[in-house]
Length: 324
Image (cartoon, rainbow, N blue to C red; front, side, top):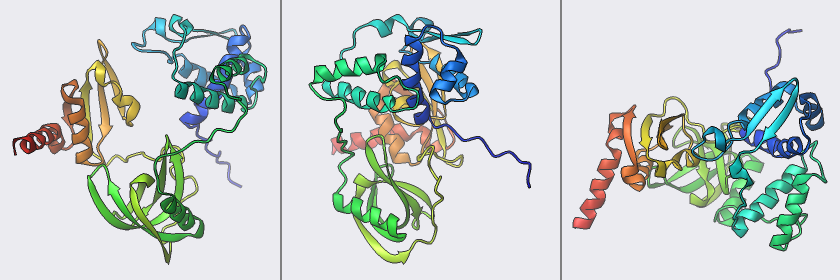
């Protein structure tokens, strides 16, 4: 019998956010509960609870100064939350944003330890009343614009363990190819459907957006490289160290980049400016990003020297088309 301890289960960002959505309103409604009480109520180990609360202390609004962050106080085994003044201001939500809050809040109420009659339930009831809906009604979510026949073919291939041939448009490389894939999973992520599998053309694992698959044909050949059940569970789009990186300096108007794309590092430069390091899987993707950002972004470092001039080259090609 081995005495080696099994590795601790990893906590994904989505799990942590869902847990905090249930824990925060309960702590706020119970003045200074003990950490042991919170841990027991929500079934969270105390060490992990303290890690979550430390993350919560960094939640706020730009420019992320102390007066715009949530204050978390842990003393004598108890915890208090003090919300910044900006959180007391009335929110102006679109109907879509309000519906998203109702759906997310209803899901949070189903988590262990949530108070069915607490402040979250009261807020959801008021919001649902304004929208004229029943918060217990099912919500139909439409993901992307994928063709039903393509999605059905991919699901069939995964279920039966057969290869699939796809006609695929790669947005990053701006090219259309036909390739054979050993499908591992079809999953939804941030409003779109994706296929994860082994690509025989690239000879590596790849993730494909289903709405960019023009046609999918299930083949008779069984998959040659089955996928591991946990593969890509934490981050389906993680790029390895062999993928080149670029470092950009962003003006305040370009801060949305860190919320839209995965980045390796973020550094505050003052006055709302950022320095970010991100992976570049394909040069055409970086070209489009830099052209879109315009003077609000500057390349200050690049693993591949060719990437440093990507935006300039793309802009020159665009200007050349206008001259013609």
